Each structure stands twice: as structure tokens, then as C-alpha cells.
Length: 244
Image 1: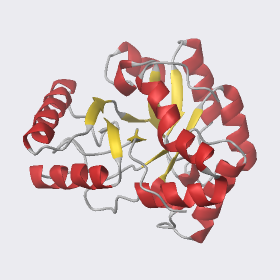
Image 2: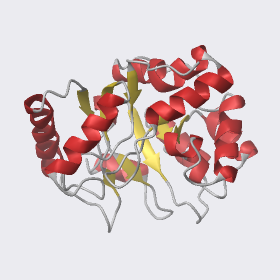
Image 3: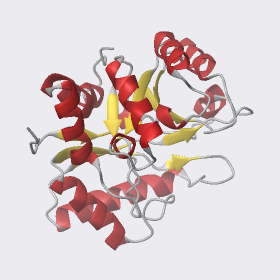
Image 4: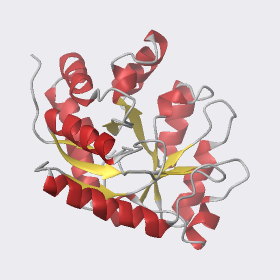
């Protein structure tokens, strides 16, 4: 039943050269783009980290790196549409509103959707962050929710019901982080909590996107697989409302 789906869309990636921990050089960026193309990916949102005290690349450098990568893809005949966003780390002591007001962060493809990341171990009220973003008329995509050790099925439902969209990593689906996390991730998908699967790719990690797609295809069928790997992401890119 495995298939090579040709229109996958990846909304979370670290491919721009030298803006975070994703790609140290041009060769690594080309490698990641080629891996994505081989997996049948047609569109990628590039989401370099913004994390206070760790990844604070000036926005002009990010835009410059993005433009350079677009040109690099054309020069190497890698036919993938590239868009820009950020993965924004929310500390307990930081405010999403403050980031917006200071114009430090980039939404996903200039939409109202923002990809937010949280501590894996230090508990934070994610639902409250989502609610406060809604008050600002912004929408939240939770990055790799399966990695937050303090989030369980009930917490995930609360976060979803507050209005967040939820993304999980392809690497979790294929078991890169152990059976427990794979089981947790598949449970979230079974319960209808997940809106996107993304690669969260870095040069030193495997690009598991197509492998993960085929696992979801076998377990849940083509309709759900295409929704999680393509259709919802297409709506986001078109700045349409992503149906939950």
C-alpha cells in the first residue's frame, strides 16, 4: 500500500544556512532540499528558530538567507516552492504579545498562523498562551506537541479546544525517539488532535517525511494521510482557515 505521494507540504524545517542549528553550510542546505524533493515534497515553510538568548538572528539576516536559499534551489534545479516562517520559543517569562509588538517574529507565510515551541520539561500553560494569542487575533500552531513531557491526552484536548492547531514530527511517527513517543503520537492522530505532520528537519537528522506518510497511510487511510501531510498545509499557505 506504500506510495510516493507527490504533493507533500512540510510546514516546519530548518534549512536556511547559518541562521540556527539546522544547516551549517550551503552543501547541507542543498542536501536537505534534495531529500525533501526525493520524498515528494512540493512546498516547504522554512522556520528558523527564534529563542531568546540562543537563536536571535536579526530578521534582515533571515530574509537574506531565505532569498539566498530560493536562488540556490533554482540554481540546482530543485523544484520546490519555499516560504518563510519561524519556530518561536515561548518561555514562562516571555510574552507572545511582546514579541509581536517588538516585531521580532515571523508568521507562517505571512499569515495569521504562528509556529510556537515550548520547553520539553518545564511546564507552561500552553492553553493560556493560545487563548492570549486569540485575543490578539492570531492563530497558534503547536510545534511537535508529543515532545512535551507534561502534555498528555487530556491536556492536548484542552489545548486543541482552546483553538490551537497541532503539529507532530515525522521522526516521532517512525520511532526515532522510541516506542513510547511513537505510541503517544499515533494516539493523538487516532483521536483527531493532529492537524499537521512536519519534518522539523536539520542536516544531522534523517528526513523521515515519506516514511511517516506511508505509516499513516497504512494505519489510518489515504484521506487522513493526505490531510495531515498536504491538504491542511495547503490551506495554511493559501491563508485559508484550516478546518479542525
